[in-house]
Image: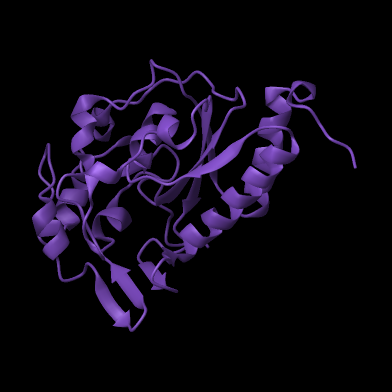
Length: 244
């Protein structure tokens, strides 16, 4: 058996290995965020989870962990983004009391496990990072911005990405330009599409959004569906009707 030391692998070789795995699983977006004391979520973005409701209730912000709490000594966060297979459907499947996920999130779970395994083979540490604030970290990685809907808007896929993070002690972070939240410009397509009028110019009424009859619908005993009005209406990264 051959053991490979981290020093024997350049950052570019490690990144190439990550990208190969992402390609196998159809992961459309891969980002590498440098983690240091200068990379922090801006205070005005900490309201991203205010009153956010999910299937188990309102998100408990007090349980959100910083990357360094999860992996002391982490130097980079690898961010994987998988596009919704169907822009007009966002469906989650409850497999057990501990695991509920969409098809896209399941693919991300498998791909991130493969990335972590590969990092360890290359002599690096790796650990998954799942956080409701991943969209803020994705902005800091230069992958997009926070839109009027307060969703993460990818430069290439709009708000149609599901995200997963992998922490590592490998020095993979890349310099990037952070895109301003005002990148939506004058576009108001998501606000016009919202069936309950929850999206205003500068904020989202989470209580209205959470109470929308299109959200948290139980299709069957273990299948739930969520509103995709703002996602489907966003012109950024929208495919034409003739695209497969």
